[in-house]
Length: 141
Image 1 (spheres, helix red, strand yellow):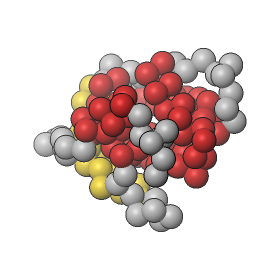
Image 2 (image 1 turned 180 degrees about the vertical axis):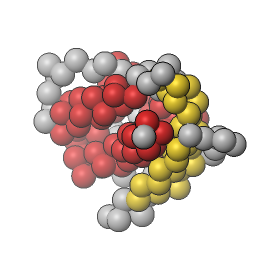
Image 3 (image 1 turned 30 degrees about the vertical axis):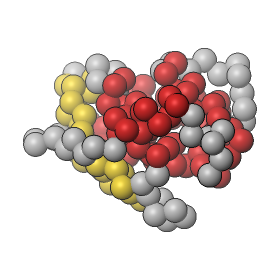
Image 4 (image 1 turned 90 degrees about the vertical axis):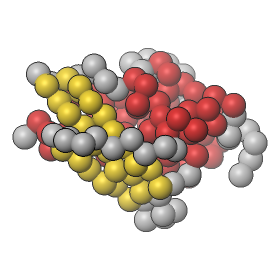
């Protein structure tokens, strides 16, 4: 894969996201698989008063999946559950449509701008967000 994709910031996040940190007693967990590349992400979450209070993960996947998981570990706790879906949609527009007018509510996600050149890898970036969205929805039930 091109060195343009795996920039220093993405690799640093990937390193943080590569070590599994599962929760002992999550309110909910969700596993999402990418059938195209074989990536698998499991996210554990605890939620209180509509906010994410704990987050755990296990990623079996590429550096982009690991990087997103690492970013979530750093930024998702304390966020409202509905913010996760909005952040995922913003990221899809930011990368997929190359829309620089998108205001990323999680500005740290701008690190994934190089993925614009490799649109087939967008799903790798989104996979942990999808798992977190599903886990949050299950915890909210």
